[in-house]
Image 1: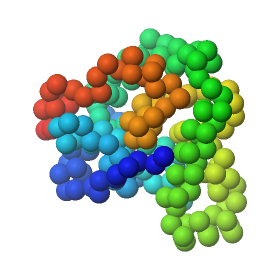
Image 2: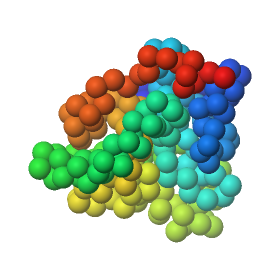
Image 3: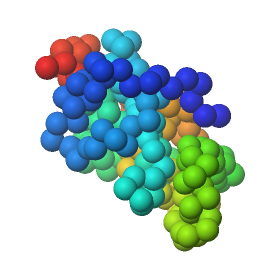
Image 4: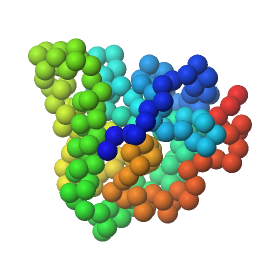
Length: 187
């Protein structure tokens, strides 16, 4: 299920995003819109272009919220990636993980313009295959649980409103919104 709604970028969003992304490598042109906003109306997750500067951009959902990015980084530093992969091995269904990754590939393909799709099919079949055959964040689609990074998983979960390890994510992220938007999102 793709995001139910994608907000177009408003002028205020651009300035908020630049503040949210300071210190991170970010090009505003990758953002197609906002896939999720927090209760304060600030961008949490961006919907991104599948091609950027003529190359595949496999991050369909980018976690823009500095509060959540900080929480994900802290969890990763404490072994969160391995913990999530272990949880999924013990609790998630292989088919659900494959389906989740296929859904990302299908969404990426749907975001291509007709011209981009034609160009890739005729002149860049390898690039088209990379977009078509990879899952969340460009992860190779296979049955083993390889989550790559928690930021990608959280962004996908929030945007799509589901994840094969949703219970694990909910348990570790008891809140997905900050109490102080001035501290995290506004200059």
